[in-house]
Image (tube, rainbow, N blue to C red; front, side):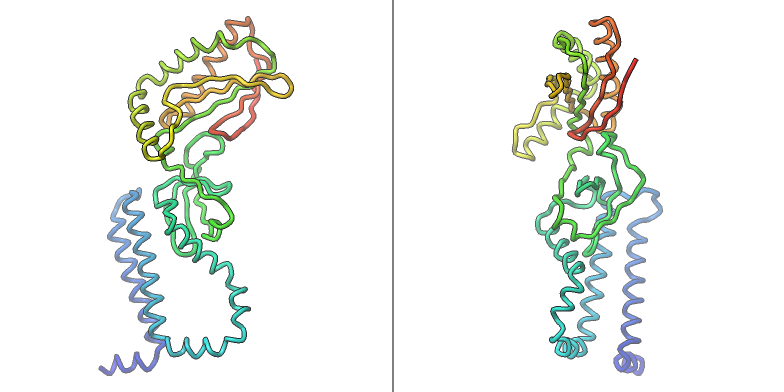
Length: 295
């Protein structure tokens, strides 16, 4: 009883004890969730994030109740400078509201692939102030982790659109654009090229077809099928753009793209008796990167 009276009398000491106790409980729970594994599963990451957010909310609630009288007195004393406080804490308020906006719209959860502005990656943690992602090199069509962890404030959700790329974790519409300077009739090359592409994709074609149907039902739209597509367009200076799209496993997209390029180069060489002129290859997934291929 004497200890309780002492703690109630000295609120700073009680506050320190509460913070230490809740922090210890949080660390213990996270330790139990993590276990001895080297790599965390999506379920573990979700429960660790829930534990951190839950203990933080619990701590804030307890401290608010404990210091309610002092907070009320302080609120009355700062009424005259309330506008200045709001302006000074604008970014913090935006982070809180951004977190509420994310939760209410259900735009993504831990484990999803997202794109926010120029950032692309897998969500590994989010809280009331910030979101953390494991960066993925989508801009160069590689679909692999860069090893970089990016943390950005939740206020970013009000200035940039959030793209959920979760379906790309397994299969992706991979686009390749090959630009040829010389104007020649390329259409005779496409039939045998399509056959070669289908051979490259033969081992996963049935799975790709089923996964494509699942994506269509989930999105509620008619998407391109799993079959490869080729079409040609012309540039403003007369060059020809060969566009090839395949639906393939994400981890194999880069390898398949190299095989398809090789098949096209061989077919071009056999048909026109020489290697392609200096060629610019732009790829992937709607994002362009220039590379010059010469003999």
